[in-house]
Amino acid sequence: MQILLRELFILQISTNNGQTWNTPVEVIHSNVDPGQKCIDRPWMVIDKSNSASQGTIYITTMNAKGVIAGFNPYISISTDGGNSFNWRYLDTTDYLSGPLIRQPMPSPTVATDGTFYAVYPSYVTSQSVYARALLAYSSNSGNSFNYHTVANYTSGISDTLPKLGSFLTSNLANQITWFLPLWK
Image (cartoon, rainbow, N blue to C red; front, side, top):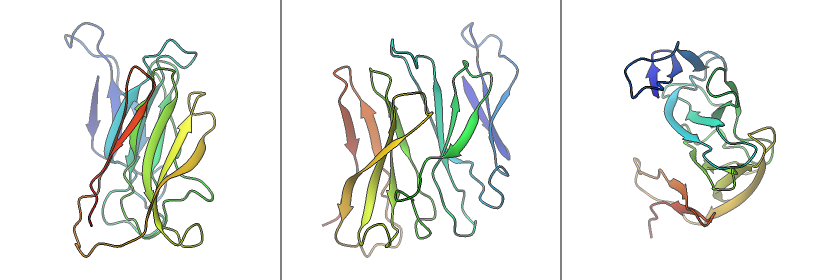
């Protein structure tokens, strides 16, 4: 598979070790959420489980630099082998990323039972007095999501360019692991 970028992400699939590629399929376009350029930092995971969601393709993105407040993590989902995608915000009411985190990069994984997980940053004082890391997860190919807080950040950092990206992964025992840098 390959993903190409201009003002949109497309997905192409090869079934013969890259000799030929299928017709490009649009994953998400920069204008689906007007003014938000939801085409930065794509991460793709594919459900390789033996569950009902096997083969589901999940691609997460975030806002590119230079957009106005209204920042969100995004997810595009294909349940038909990459022939079509539907996008949505990954965050939701009470679990919003918020207007202060300009590039809320989600980190996705799929567990061996087919459950999709993604962790993303949040800072909305009406939701919590703390900046948080939130987990969105779905066991039905993204038809619905559940949410909970993974961490509350109780102290700030003075670095104006912190590298706070995290990494989420899963293993064969169906455990998810979250790796992130912390400052003390």
